[in-house]
Length: 332
Image (cartoon, rainbow, N blue to C red; front, side):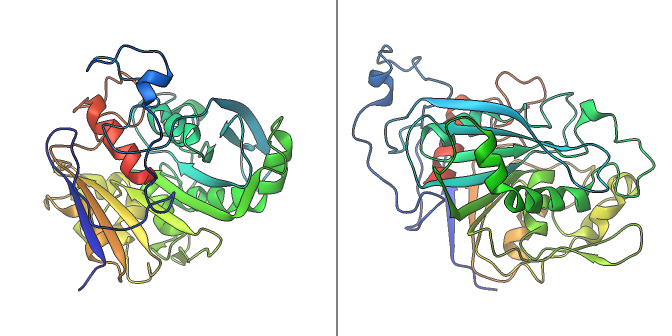
């Protein structure tokens, strides 16, 4: 199977990439030094955790604001869909990222409270980032519920992304100072881990509904860009322990995932609990129809250096340079 391109980030902060476009389109040369703009000392230790780009050219950051919660009443959902909106303080015709969090072991990181290292950077560089809190957020206490969609709530997660787009105008008007500043024609779906799987489900990836066996997953053309970060692979290669716990994942297939997508993987992101195959999380790139682009981060494990939050205990490969490179490359 022929795919469009592949990008690999070598050890250290330097990066090599094939020519192409990311969420922001062609890369833009920075007009100034981010660290200097923030009056920080120009040395290796002066790395603003929300704006540092690991040497990758990006524009100067803008101040950002964050507003939450915006609540959306969804019929049949046990609690309202709560979203957080993080946006540049200035600008118009702003593109939108709808970000889907991972499943994760922490109480608040797998929710709209997490992923600050990514969200703040993208907002400071021109995106409005909308983060829904899915039903599998630990603090909601629904992972052990009798719902057949539990504990991952994969079907509900995909519906959450669609609901955000359905209610985008309401969300925009609910946030002070944001009305009229969004570009509804430029919406990206981005997600990490289970969130990457969620992006797949609005991109033609499919699973079987655990309640009735029907097919879940279809292409939602309202998303013009898609990024799947360390997402699960083919269901048939899910190992027994994980298959028992996460039954819905066993039916994951990529035959219908036809849109362009950026697939981000870590070189060392392998956990035998999930699969015997060390390249399992590359399946959205390998098994899906072209065109796809894969970004492989050298030495990175599942957290890619700590993208889910700052100073997280669960980050097994904490590396601020790696995080900076990942978010800047996705942006670019």
